[in-house]
Length: 159
Image 1 (tube, rainbow, N blue to C red):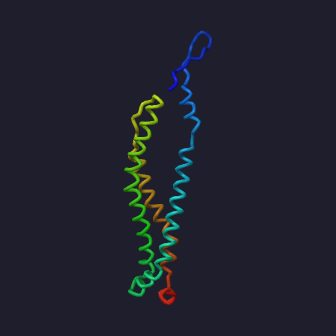
Image 2 (cartoon, rainbow, N blue to C red):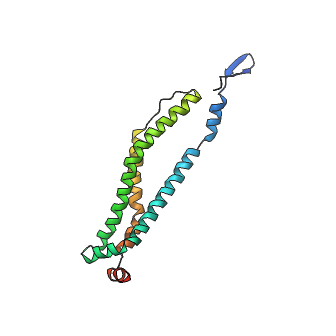
Image 3 (cartoon, rainbow, N blue to C red):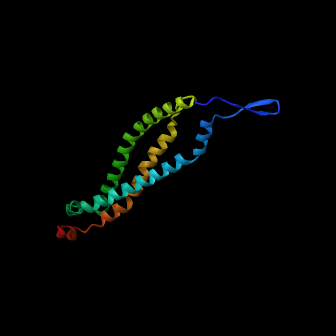
């Protein structure tokens, strides 16, 4: 930890920032960029999982259609799958993220010598959780539409 040094300006000495804080300020928007990349990767992973599930479960979806499911109901099954995956991610990830974030910030702040009281913005957390479920639902639209178009005769004959 570096001490506050003073730089002379005429006969007045003004405090300057410690070099650790100056280095921290250079990070700038990097955390936002990393968060955006992680979000894009999460959406891509969810889309891949939904496409794969719809392709793998083609026979089961065809059987549901034979039993009376309509195109909309088959699509809803895929949309529910995406919604459940997103809801589980939020239920597990948010508390775990808050706990690990608080622990990490306290460790970092104590080394830096700044106040280590973490701030947890509840409205932002709720907004991100809701946005996660909405994005998962929107991501499911294309795989759900493809799954809804499954033709039972073709899918069951192929097996």
